[in-house]
Length: 425
Ligand code: 3PG
Ligand code: MG
Image (cartoon, rainbow, N blue to C red; front, side, top):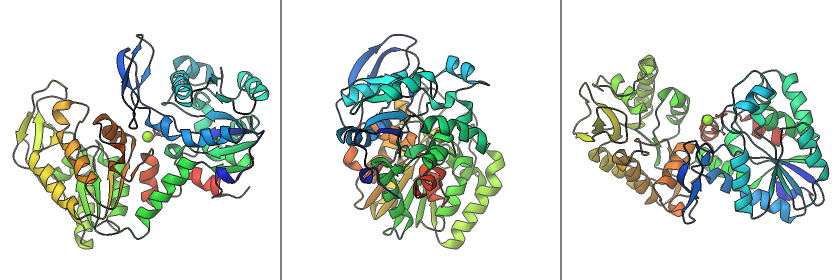
């Protein structure tokens, strides 16, 4: 894969596809912003103005943009935010979300103005592209305002890709978190311009390659998160690679149910039980140890102010739902991580956003931070948990910006965005 550093960019306009799909808070008021090891600071946000609750993905995209500017390029950032709804451009643009708060944050972090286009690849974007100079930065509006961005029709995507490519001389793909999407700005646009991978993509791929090519053993994988259906494919693949799978979070209750345990009112994907049972049988055959929670922190409802209770065994009574792993599970997971030489962690073990149910996530994060070896945190939620819990960023070898993208990479699937960048042009 050609790297952005190898492209001649002085005096050129570079279209940089970034993944700045950051979590937004729409409630307004006083919000903490900032992350990535810098001191948190408070900023007053008027009601109705969405604020960014975790800017880790914007920070992760800075090195590539700074380097291009430094080398005399003008940079046009293309990114998506959320999943805008509506049949056409006008409806989506009216409904939002706009990239305005992201452009504002990028300007703060770069310490220079970022011009936000009034559209994605229409008249406004064309005027900005035609008039920008070296060292200047602009951002296109949310690329998903264009329904063509996510179209399954190659021609429909191709038309938008053509308009995007016409804005620039060179394409740099740096949006690792969106590389698993066969979208116009991710897959089709790079094929129309000289293209290369940005620094974030190179770093992400480098680490994921280490996980998939002879990882040092024991290789321990910790999986959490709400939905087992999102993770079954990767779990199936990891059974052939990892030595131990520690399973927690909402998905663990479907595993416990598959083993015949009572899970009370905990989140359950009953239709997944046969597949989960099959994965457990495969793991058994392959000699892969699967470790499930042995106790829980429960409550009678899903709320920050619900009363936490420890259930000292794997079964959860009716009327209670599991919201975190219990202390015995935290200890067990720490022991199962102690001798690890490689760790991949995706998905929080508990509802860490509620302080009363954050202890399990913190314990797992701490246990992983003591591992000497390659430790990778993958996925927006686990990365956000690490920042939310204010763990030092150097506690892990790598915090991936990709959730679905890193899982699909570990599943062994080809990522369309990476394939397009690999294609020589
Ligand atoms: C993400 O946040 O996972 C990426 O930005 C991709 O977004 P998507 O899941 O809406 O395609
Ligand atoms: Mg996603």
